[in-house]
Image (tube, rainbow, N blue to C red; front, side, top):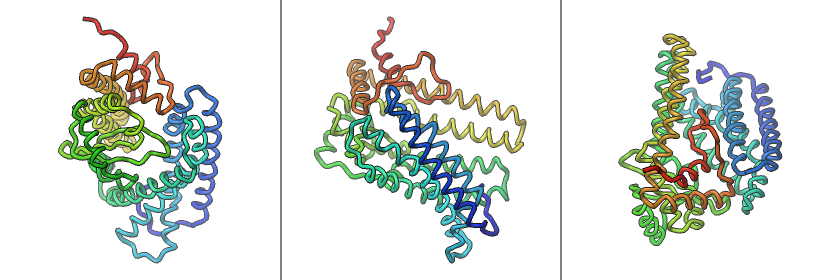
Length: 370
């Protein structure tokens, strides 16, 4: 899929495939949205629709388009000399075409999300923001994946896997600079920065600087911290600042501080890298196939379990900073703002990296034994 092609493929088959994938994506998004709107807790189900159905379909679409040579076929229409820039353009075209498939699947769901959340989100605005994200992400991926294209012919599959791992690590620590390229951000005003500094102090959250993400239309109240240990950048959505009072904001930022302290994000990325390397090695015959395949599964399950464990540990850290009652109220308020009915599970899902929000709230409400 990543190998360079000596001659461009025919244009017809990949174009027909793209049109078919766009049609299937739009149909899947429309049908999925119609079903989800009639279910209980539809906002949570929309997230499941995106993550478990539409995103995997988009990844599959990339594989189909790359296999059929959509990028080389389109790039051949332009008079470019073979080389690094030509390879970037080829990859960019393939990723961008995959983005069209995602947009086709995403577009029919916008109205449903707007209705169940009761927000004034215009379809044109949502598609514009998503389009910018896809455009920027396609450009970044096109640039970083080119070095891997020369590896299969000169190196072992294990070296290719290590190259993919290196790219994952780069994305992990380059996020403070990548996110502003993909989404609209701004520096907080002096008054807002002073308020955030107070919230961070109460939460015990140490970062180098702050950026505000514009989410006034979709009303998504989120916070995240990204970057290497010596350059942590806090991203807060404008809705977070508008919808949450200081008590709620400090409690939610304390969770972010706890997740930094327990290395939740690093655990997730490391799990995917190690499990992926073992899986690639097993599929390419590097070592014992079944042993490596088993190792991949064990690493994945252990990493997911550890992620859930550390999420609970992060909540415990936050409860110590702001109090269990304040943290429980903050999580309930978060659910209310996003129109989510906090989900609960009787038994943990071994294939999930998250703890259901309802279970986290219940844990805070359960008295601890002396």
